[in-house]
Image 1 (spheres, rainbow, N blue to C red):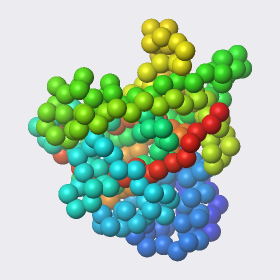
Image 2: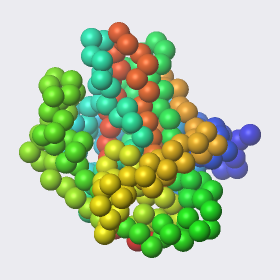
Image 3: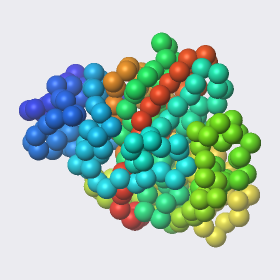
Image 4: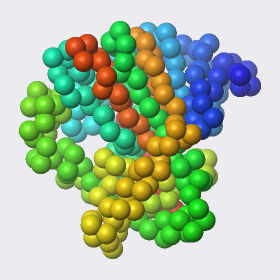
Length: 283
């Protein structure tokens, strides 16, 4: 059932998170319309738009209404716009990018606010993206587990995903992901954060970039981390988005995980992503 907004139409897509927004042109909007989009983003954690025709300049302009742009060090950039990362899979390539549950840039000292992904070319079928609410994941934990986690911090790193250890992966060999010498980021964040905008508590670890709990060894950390990774992707915490050419998704990297499904062998998928600068996180 549509939600109540004056300038946009907002339709939730799942109980946990996610809403489709219609009645708006992202390339041209007034401040009042943008304010409603921002409110919907805070409420639903990930927002979706269809039938958008935006140029790279317009993509950048929409992103800059939210925050400064965090230029990705590892993705192949758009030649004319280095702040736009290309997320590409060609028909002859087997590996996709983002094919594991994660949140973008958690390895940065000041993690990303969110990401804005624009669909330039999509397969005839497949290539959906899944999202999971880390608000719901935290809230569903037992009081004892919540208390345990709220006393912990965890290390996040870019080294094991983008560094030299993975140079033999297809996406590294073909140049979609590069610059392994720049994968030197290590950051310590609370395991449970208080969201800087909504004030809600959210689980803040992820399978792609979290290495271990502070003061624990990796071997000691892994069983509890694995439990949290399994817990966080229960169906009742998730939604799924089916892309069309011209679709846009914007997700909150402080409150969600996402996962790109690699189920479109022999088809091409081209997406443009901008990542937004955030603020320091606190428990």
